[in-house]
Length: 386
Image 1: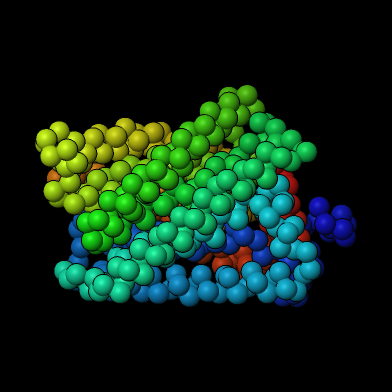
Image 2 (image 1 turned 90 degrees about the vertical axis):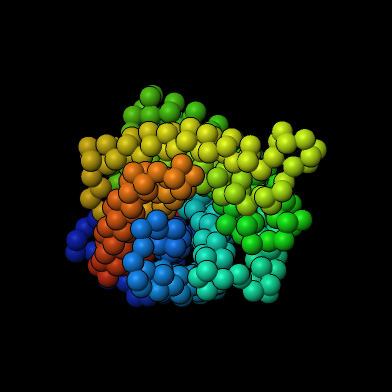
């Protein structure tokens, strides 16, 4: 805890109001969860199976708002680091805030994928310039995400302080999330790439998706161990459990998307054995298996939150939006793959619930900023309180 915080109770309603500069010191990396969730919402609007006139325009508006949010958050984050010397290094090495650093890259992933969705007029081919730009963006993103996945875990493994399993939180999975979303980006951009580039992008995307899912599953073992041995997290951090919904959901989504992104005539040995059709079938089966795991984690999270609802807003509430966006997108993808209208209507219902959740969390987020419940000493991800 920072000096001078001992005499101010961060939960005291009569606590003093602070000027903007002092509050910016507590403007944490976790703010990018807002950008991730807004980007996820724009993707979800683009994927809706049941549309109406003007829906694409709404999605385009959300996409543009998300770009503005990203620029604004990045500007405020840079301002924070310039105003408060040493805060950049401190934010990356902090045992709680540091885990939220990857949300910056996850925000970029949602921007790349939604640019593919909204950068092209409906029912027309994207411009070759956009196709090339997104191809380059994919590889730059993949390199950075790999650096985060290896670098951040290497840093955590080399720490003298021990992260005990009793304090394990789903945020421990976050450093592997960006590389896992490389597969989702590959799934979205590959159908528009020339065949020779599409195969390379899908190969890289599948590799990254495999790494992300494998590390997430290893983390699940610890998460279940923590839940069995010490029970559910503190009331205020229970929405974070929804992060566990993300890995299987986005992997299911990427499986189907990448299989569909393969060139139609993909058949290496020309023997008709492992061809695009066979791979698509395998992808759908795998996606359904993974969807079931996401379903299980989703209801574990729902029951945990209902059993003891958080009293104060934390940025971790956004975990109830972004991972569940992946869950809903995966449901729609599976519905499309099976051509099942019933499944697609479930996806539509989930989308409406998610929109309600987004607006609820956003309302609480805005209120928390105004009443100084967040961006305040002792109330953000830069303190350890679990």
